[in-house]
Length: 249
Image (cartoon, rainbow, N blue to C red):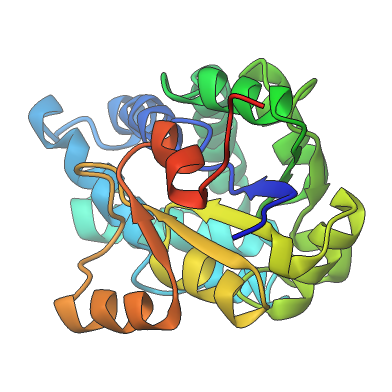
């Protein structure tokens, strides 16, 4: 395997977005769901990340706008946990609370800095491809002290749609300056990230962190992904080994 570049997903791959959601949704709960016990705040995070209504997926396909999908998810959350229905004004206030708490808690996972530095020292090109907007994710990388080493290359607004569409991966490779077959894509979502990357001709790496899955994944789905060539790791520190990258040179 010859690898010249590594593209990273951002949320829950480089940045501990789940942890940031805990802060954001706990802040929301204190104001809009005051009767929900604090010990149930993790349930809010689970439901939010699962997005069973598929609103964020619709956004990444270009079917709905960003504000529309977030408002729909907020109202679904309130309906499930006993919060008030949010009209446009109510959601605007809700979103200000959410965003202040969320953006203040953007930090890199502990295993990120060392592996990014090692890949760069080995002469590989490194960049980011995400299913959020370029400006938003640029802010996130900057807050997490990663932007100087991991440039934001492609977001959902670059082409008007996001992963797992093959063109998003190919455009990221073009901007990275590497050939798809010599580029790895590392992300925490098996289907959207790793399987999508393989379908676009890249090396797909599934970062399966302990307790990090956003949804239940069957053994059949995992086996099918393995047969398609997806590599599976449980920590970013294992990226070089998985890709056979000689870091001594």
